[in-house]
Length: 251
Image (cartoon, rainbow, N blue to C red; front, side, top):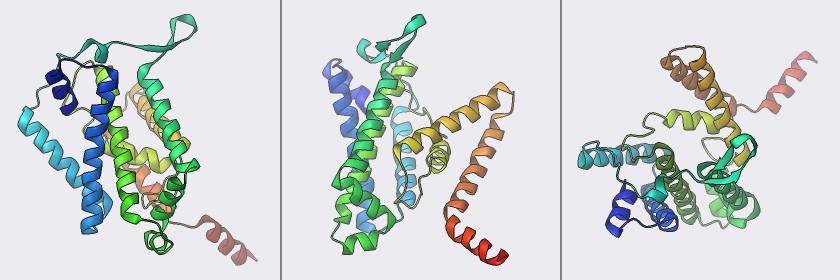
């Protein structure tokens, strides 16, 4: 919404300016979260939920829930990045997703910063004693997530053809379920981009399948809730230790 208002004030802009603005707003919000977490030593998920509700409340209060339909043509045009056979095409949102995944994969697997992020997520105190700048890691992690969220919001508007203040509200559990199913640990220190993608795909397939079967959307929420509960429970179990314990018992 802030990006749309800024672009309107600047006379329209273009994709480059849109990406810069959306990314900058996202990074700023991510850095606010990082500052609160690092400064007050609060559990990260509590801070992010609190700021999410506060910012969403501010947005709805000042906009009264009004959508923005008057958008620049470049933002709403369907852009085919790659043309496929039989009239198909690879559109801009898909290309942006692939680029975001590739950039994130490179950051966390091919840079020293990525290794430090994994170490910090797995054991913050151990990482600090090993010389990792933990506050810096907080800002990098949440700043990067803010950047990705800004780009995602830009692509969401390209798909919906309008800026909707309450778009995707209520889908937070879907995100948690997707990343946990993809092998990420909510406490940090484990996870991959490919696993996250597969988790998102699985959640989308399950939701679409339930819709095609005519199952109530409330049942999908139940499935997502149980999935998160089961995934978190099993993620805290050391499967190797359990297997060894069982083999000793049978022996």
